[in-house]
Image 1 (cartoon, one colour):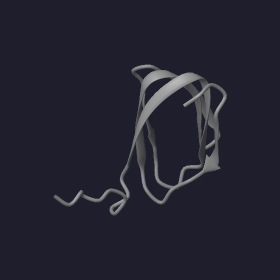
Image 2 (spheres, helix red, strand yellow):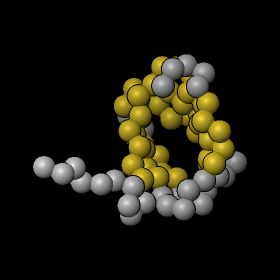
Image 3 (cartoon, helix red, strand yellow):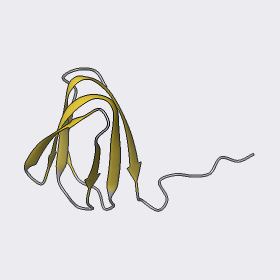
Length: 75
């Protein structure tokens, strides 16, 4: 993500887990703000309202526990 990109507040019906590969973001979950930096991980519970603001150029990996979110590729 580029600097100053914002992800507006939203929620999911499933848990989300993420890892900050490189960079820095301000993550707000249910009104509580924290700064996530390179090497940090985070967990966002199902139905938690959350948003993010990237403070510097960043790379994150997000995983979602939604049952049908990921589909196997056909050979």
